[in-house]
Image 1 (tube, rainbow, N blue to C red):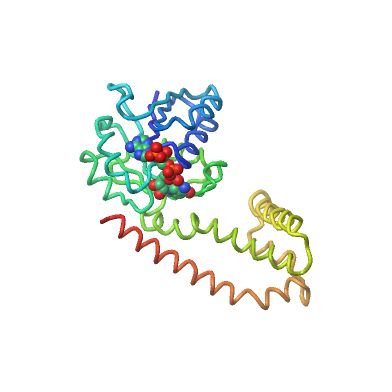
Image 2: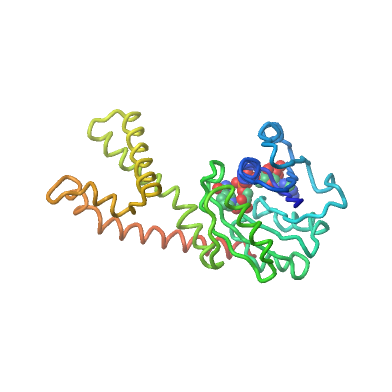
Length: 275
Ligand SMILES: NC(=O)c1ccc[n+]([C@@H]2O[C@H](COP(=O)([O-])OP(=O)(O)OC[C@H]3O[C@@H](n4cnc5c(N)ncnc54)[C@H](OP(=O)(O)O)[C@@H]3O)[C@@H](O)[C@H]2O)c1
């Protein structure tokens, strides 16, 4: 039986809890810390029968002798330092700390946790609440193979999870966490163009989203590839080609520039949070 403690039950902590309850199988016991207990009722109803769950308001009410296998830190960067202090007593040589805290490096956790603690830094996205996160994560040298397998299982229960270098975890904030918002913004621009040309807003929005769904299915389930999908609707001298000629080069250049701006800002914020 592995004991998994989720610390902080806001947007992300509750998404993790729901994902674990829905998708984790095996011998796990979830311990969920929610200051105000706002999510207790929903999570209690969610119980799948595969996984046990207990609910607490703070570290003091956890069983003192609890042997934690995983501590998952889902609190804001501003309070992470004091939160780590609260939970250090639950760390044994077999415990790993999994962080989703933006801008906090592996080195930061190593500095604030007992020596040789296994640390995983991850960056989930808004899709986590739907089981559709694109999570990139990295591990320090103290994570064992068994822990690594559990980490993957935990992160995959909220979507796709890829182990990469810490540099790419940092960059995934811009490309995929912000990227989700940027993609939505682009689709909204397509919506505005349709509205400008006479379509009722609600119908245009539905159509834009339906197109997005079609792209996802064609790419994912039928393995076409994004460019191939664009090519599938492009005929020589046709309408898609006319739009591509006007947009592709400029838009690609803008996307590069946008991502550079996001990466620069992400580095600035990380530096600020380190202070
Ligand atoms: N939201 C996203 O899309 C996203 C994506 C990737 C990463 N992240 C990272 O995920 C972390 C959490 O974000 P969020 O959006 O879930 O924030 P949130 O909704 O504010 O949730 C944080 C929760 O932690 C609780 N908390 C604070 N101190 C605590 C403590 N000592 N012990 C137990 N619980 C404590 C807060 O309770 P109180 O309000 O009562 O203090 C709150 O319920 C952040 O570090 C963020 O950088 C977020």
